[in-house]
Length: 412
Image 1 (cartoon, helix red, strand yellow):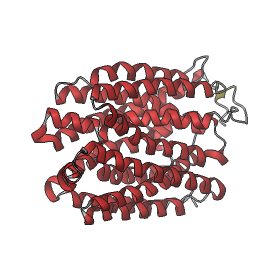
Image 2: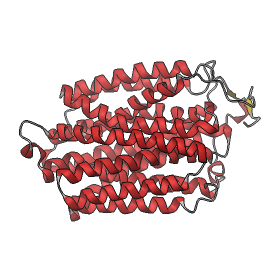
Image 3: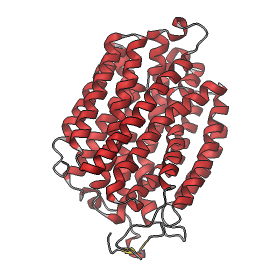
């Protein structure tokens, strides 16, 4: 650990067993507010507010929020690194993010126009990013290197369970206002539990590092770190292109509600996420454990990209409910293996202990860029060539992301 941290010691703060389940719970609630509404609640709202232009309206809402996230995440990451309080660097931002999210959850469910929905969704993402950057940094702050694969698997599990949680709540209560309120309350509860596990992390930055981060600090990263960012952007683009329009794919191509009378498209999305989630969980745990034991990142990541790509392409060429279920299984396995190994690799390549949140925020920006751009690119692709072409393009992007991993020198 760098000497420029006040009170720095050679060992990381001691963490109890509660850290890992608390990380899963807090990350699940956080990603549920980021990903869950995108799969079902927001498409439903958009469908009500702009039924004749729903594809582009959805791209607008998600794109604006994604752009806001790209700007705010690195800023919050940097501010988190230089924060000096008696509670440490991360806890104040976790509390602040929770305080932002809860009131926005009250307002967004009552949106009366696409512009209003885009505004509240963007503000909700600001609050989510106030949680995302510090939460990611705790893995580097308090988790020993030999356990980071499993810690990363915890975040991968969270990202898998989160869509199930979001769509499950939507299917259960129907009303968008109730969905956001339930998710907001879950944020409060899980963040409080997570904060309790971080009480031993009291490392403070010295006053002399309280200065504006210069561009040369960012440029100082080695090429391997930037290759990881590029790898995550491409994988994320493929993933978001494949998943962002599943609601409309089930509605317009599979005709799920007509095929299964008495069920809604929301029910179909819930079934898919319920199939997808356990596949992610199992793959993330297996991949995270293998990464911790072998320190081999490339094999896990290349395998993950191939499995995901096969799933996306099969979903495209079959054009059936069975094909979409196959897509859910294979993309779930691929994403789970990717999530644990890729995050562990990113933490492994961090160049400076002083800038953990700032550096990991660059990784988060890669993810948020794909969340912002994926639906937009997919919307254009749907307009030009239909849904099948978008799924095939998704698979190709994910394969390219795997190829990039093979040239990262610092990874085995």
